[in-house]
Amino acid sequence: MRLLILTKRHPQQRDLIERPYGRFHHLPSALAAQGHAVRVQLCSHRRLASMETERWGVQSSSHDLHTLGARRLFRTISVEAVAFRPDWVIGFSDIWFACLAHRLANRTSARLAVDAYDNYEAYMPWNLPLHWAWRRAVHAADLVTAAGPQLAARLQTHRRGKAAVELLPMAADPGFVPMDRSACRNSLGLPAAAPLIGYSGGWARNRGTHVLLDAFQRVRQVHPDALLVLSGNPPVDVCVSPGVIALGYLDDAQLPTLLNALDVACVITADTSFGRYSYPAKLCEAMACGVPVVATSTDPVRWMLKDDARFLAKVGDANDIASRILGNLGMKRVDYSNLPTWQDSGQHLENLLSG
Image (cartoon, rainbow, N blue to C red):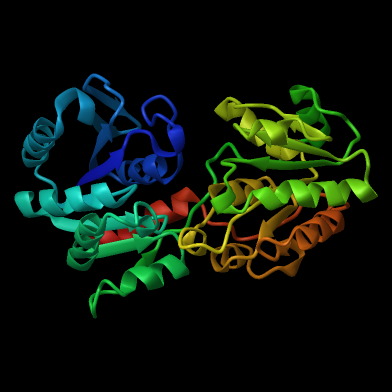
C-alpha cells in the first residue's frame, strides 16, 4: 500500500525530524517496516524552510505555514499528495490534520483514516466551524482509530452507524525500560537514600496539577526527608517550595533515567473535557519502567491501570493522593503486565488498513 500520513512537525514540543517520538514516529515506521510505501507530510508554524528527509524507510516532507502562507502551503502539499498517488491518506495529531486529510483524500481518490489520541474538541471550544469540519472528517473516514475506549465512544457519536472506531493505545517509546535505581540517581546527582517522588510534564491549574504540591507537603509530614523531583518548567513558586528539586528540561535520553530514579511517579489529570479523554504518555513511560505510580482516577487512567486501586487516587483530592504515595513508597519494581507497544499498534494498524 501507498500511505500518506499528515501530522504536525512539533507534537509535545518535539521536532519529529530531530527527535522522533511517540505514535507520530513509531506507527509510520512500523508500517514502512512491513513493506508499505510511507510518506509523512509534516507541517510547522515556526518560519522554517521546507525540507525532505528519508529515515527508517519513511520519506518525509516538511513545510511551514508562516514561511509559505496558507494557500501556497496547501497547494504544495496537494501537488505532493497527487504525485505520491496514495491508497490511504491518514490524518494524525489534531483537528487541522484530520480536516486536511479529508480534503486530500477527496482530491487523490484515496481512502481516508483519522487517528486521535486526545479529545481535540476540548481545544478552542469557541471555534465551532473547525469542530464541524472535524466531525465531517470523522464521519467520512473509512477508518477511525483512538487511543482508548472512552475517546473511541465519543468519536463514535460522530459516525452515525458507520464502522466502529478501533483502538490504537498509547505506548512507551523503546528507551523506557527498567534500570538500576541507584545508578540512575547517581547519574542525575540525586540523593541516594531519600524517598523520591516525581512528576514530569505540564503544570497547569486546568490539568489539576495544583493539588500535587499540597499532597507532597502531606507526605513530608510522615517522611520529612522526602523530595519532589520535577522536570520541565513548573512555576517558580513550586520550584522554591520546601523539598522540591527542579531539574528543568532534560535531554530525551535522560527521561528514562529520571523515571527509574524515583520511588513513585505521579500522573495528574483533571475531570475536564480534556482529562476525561486523556491517555497520558507519561503514565505509559512510568509503567514500562516498572516504577510504582500514583495517578488520578479518570476513566482513561483507570482503563490504562486495569482498575488497580493501589495506583489510583481521587481526582483533585490531595489527601488521597498523599495516602497513595505513602502506600507505594515501599514498593520495588511493579510488573504491570501486557503493556501495549508501538510494534503491537503498528501491526494492528496495518491489519486495519489492509482489511
